[in-house]
Structures are given as C-alpha cells and as structure tokens.
Length: 147
Image 1 (cartoon, rainbow, N blue to C red):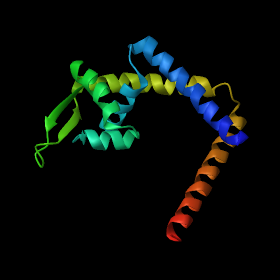
Image 2: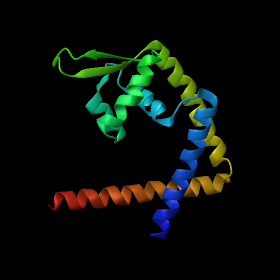
Image 3: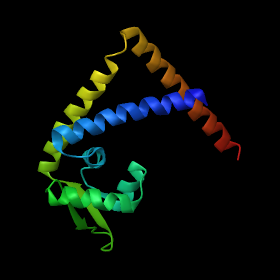
C-alpha cells in the first residue's frame, strides 16, 4: 500500500505542476490539453462518448470543456454523417496551434520536474515502472483468460 500511495503522490505532484503552469501560461486547464491531445490523434474527430471514454471521464465532464474550446474556435462540433443524433468533435487549425504550444510547455514541465533526478535514478525508475506495468498487464491478461 505504501508503494501505491507513493506512486499516486508522485503523479499528483507532477499533475499539480502541470495544472499551475497551464493556468499561468495559457489561462487554461489540463483537461483542455487532454481534449486537444485526444483530437490530435484522431483527425476525423471523435464523438463526445468516444472522447469521454478515451479520457476516462463522463460525457457530462466533457461538455463544458468542449463548449469552452468551441467558443475559443479550437474545436468544432458537427452532426455525424452516419447518425444525425451524434455530435463529432474535430480540431480546428487554431486548436492544433494551441495544442502545439501546450504540448511544448507540457514536455518542458515534465523535463523540469524530472531533472531533479540523476540520469541513473531516471533510468532505474523508468525500468522499474515499465517492469511493473508489464507484470500487472500480464497478470490481468492471465486472469482474463481464466474467467
């Protein structure tokens, strides 16, 4: 449990640094960056449901973020050609530019935060986290196949 809490605490500290930086530099939130990041990966757009699923949040949480991005002309919403009841969200050129600026800052913050570690510490931590993830994924896969 102590390891889990340390991992969550570390993630929370890094996320807090990102939130503060994005608020200061862009007067924007981390969820806006997350939406832009998801849409950069899907040039044809995503439905609100797909977007919420990718970001592991509810559609209700997505609505406000997407609305503000739309007001800023960073995304557009249009009815799906396949199902007129569904809204597809796509990135605009202004949104792609904002994402590029935010992504550069995101990388900068992460590099600054992790610069507190030596190269050896970074390498050991990275290897340990990758090994841990592989073991957890393997365990989940094994459990899934036995059910």
